[in-house]
Image (cartoon, rainbow, N blue to C red; front, side, top):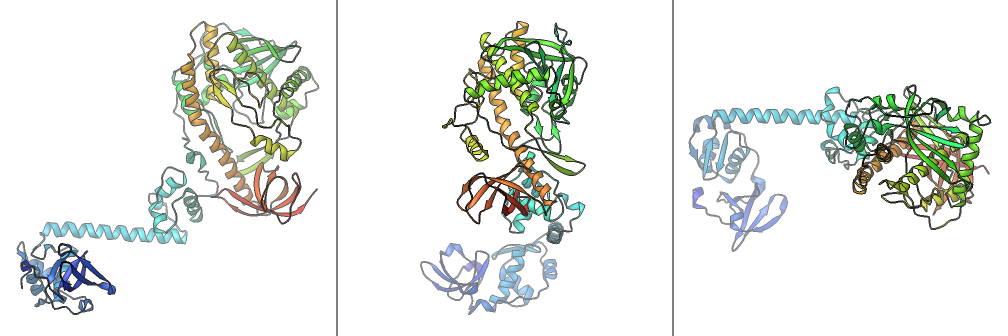
Length: 611
């Protein structure tokens, strides 16, 4: 029976889904016996006849040795049937030899076609196929060797390309990984991070969170022009002090006193970056400076800070906000002028030691009066522990920030300047990005750490608006962030608007201001999240290097059998299992039990209660 007779009957050998099957019966549908003992009813068009039989069992189809290369040479370019090929290869045509011959056709090296028309491939086709298969086999062997090295944690430098999708996944730049799929590991950034650590490809010091939060870690180089020639108010006769954390590299505000008149001087960034200039566009794309323990990625080129940072040039160009406090300690008599100032840089600790001297003593008195006014109008006082996390020469340090009066002095002075800027904009009808915040549901001021923690959670996020509205958290009727144009884009927009008005030029309209608010808000959340997660990463690295760490913690919230504790020495919140119920604000002694760096988890146990 030739193949083109297409005779299918019981006990025929047919091809079904590329595998052999035995025909059990033929009717409207064909009943098949499948490998492994299964059965299936199919349409005639779903199968292809290989041999009419009789075939009593698929178990008869055992592997056969053949002279495939010799048969290929004999056939040259001729076309034969499966029966012809079977007889050429095995001197027989049976279900066994038909299946063995078809496997050679299906393999596609020497032959190709259908049971009715099989041809020998050309010498060139054979050469190309062999080379392709050898290359594929070599790739498969290389991949299997790579997977073995991964499992044994003995990677080679040449493995970089094969790990690229793992790194991309760990950094949030990809969603799949061939390696993780091969190892049956779910494709998550945390699992990719863990694998890179486990193999030693990444050290614990690698921080993936900025990129995972969408941050580019380089800034486009930009030329910095010269300051324009313009009239500036000469305030060099006043002692101006830029007070900040030790090691600060971008001093953008300073404060001085002229009698009872306060001046807050701010780096005059808008003088070199008017709206839609290259510097403005770069700042808009960046949104804000990214502060990480291991590095600072400035919003503007470093050269801009070198030229405009207060106290870095003598004298320093500034946009100065001058104002007084009225009898009710409200900001009044506001002036805004481009100026020249002579600035002395101090750390908070240095300024703290001089608060008994003038002008610090008088500045402290005025800022405390302003603070008292804010508190009387419902400003939130939320004093949670703060720390400074730094990486120096590969070592992580975590330093508690004490609640210094000098820090509060600077904070209040900057809030005064923000209130002054908002007031000036309203008086002169300048479109502005005002900052507002709705009041919390409860107005009860916190009296301890637990109530401060709960009070903070009751506040809604502040909003940037095109019209003034109260800022409940600050206790101010109007406010605009205006003192950090080197570090925050919307502060720069404030300065651009003020400078345009002072020059007699048309400032941006409200619609353009809102567009810039939207652009800034589109990136600022990613920046803050990158900073928050990076701080947590380095805290976990710090603890991983100190497995015997012990310290104190304060209970601020209970969630069933677990308590949420604030650890002041680490600036960390941790959920810890409670063996017994504790009152809020209880102080306990903790011991570190484990750290899971990829999951950003540090686990602690309670040693004993301290209070």
